[in-house]
Length: 449
Ligand SMILES: Cc1cc2nc3c(=O)[nH]c(=O)nc-3n(C[C@H](O)[C@H](O)[C@H](O)COP(=O)(O)OP(=O)(O)OC[C@H]3O[C@@H](n4cnc5c(N)ncnc54)[C@H](O)[C@@H]3O)c2cc1C
Image (tube, rainbow, N blue to C red; front, side):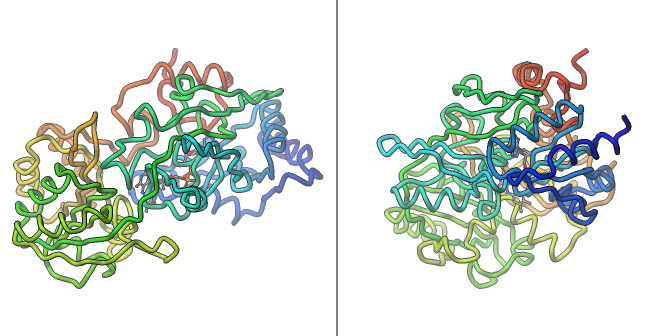
């Protein structure tokens, strides 16, 4: 059978099941085959024409099993989609086939009151999950700046870290993901519970090596985070203050620094426009006075923005991580971006890059915990002047000692450290032996021969 006949056969098999919604209108298929890959002019070019043949929305886990069974039998590619907020085309179906939405799988199955460990279905919006945790005195440890729309399954399978990374590091650090329920891409799929060791290869694998139907996570005691922004006249002073804050005994949830020109591209809810470099901080209430003191010692100006209101449309969270890029691009779409861990000491490397790439780079820094120690990650805006220039810039960053996480590539490995993870490939062999899950995104599978 040709592709269209196979898709038609799948549609007929799934039609009539009241717990499966089918979406085949061309505009819906187009919309649900995209994410935020247009941050990257490189990916925009590559992914422009990728489209699902059919979009399905199962209303429960049994319905997921039926979809998986039918697609596996017909040999159709299947790509799972949460909220579709990834920015490297993670849920774009490179080879068409079926896109399966998880938006109806949103139950919080269990919250252990003694440990705070939560077991939840993958389509649960992170905002809802965090709200429910807060009702029990807990909160999510790590959140992307898209936390109001992103799903928890999409974050585990496609994200890496974000708000909270200053204390909790990254999603793949042991201790965050404690277990997974997974379905194999098979004609008779069975739900299998994986402990934290076996779950690890599915963490940040873009849904290429198993369909997650529930996940178990550690959480943190809830804090009513307080928002401060601090303006510094000189860049060196701002970076030094960022470091001083993150090396103190103050409990922080977020420490972002944006340079003055980038600040002028952002919405103004972090304080009045100052034409200075600005730190954006989420701090525990008992640390507010200490941060104010550090700002004063550094000759900087502190704005007290009050406690976070998580029910409002925006907070400092929505000026951090990739939201900074989002806002800047909304003003001027000729900006794209990079992601890297800066070498230490950071200032000379940033200065060298600033000199070489004057007018093409705007700095945006985030403090993260890397192997137990505070480090500075950078998500600079980059003026797009073509592929060659982008590659030359990344080469310069690497030569200066930065670890670049290239956001202009499609595979799990190339967006990370570039290394094939044999455990991820082994998990794919176990849960997707015919290579139907999100094909084209796991280089280790493509190159396995
Ligand atoms: C403005 C902006 C800011 C962002 N900030 C951050 C940030 O701070 N940190 C960060 O890590 N990311 C960030 N991202 C990327 C993205 O928003 C997050 O990673 C988000 O958590 C993805 O969730 P989602 O529900 O949208 O997942 P999707 O984009 O729908 O999916 C992501 C990946 O997970 C897979 N997947 C989804 N559900 C399942 C499942 N049940 N089983 C198996 N695979 C599955 C998909 O196939 C896909 O490969 C940002 C993106 C934008 C546009």
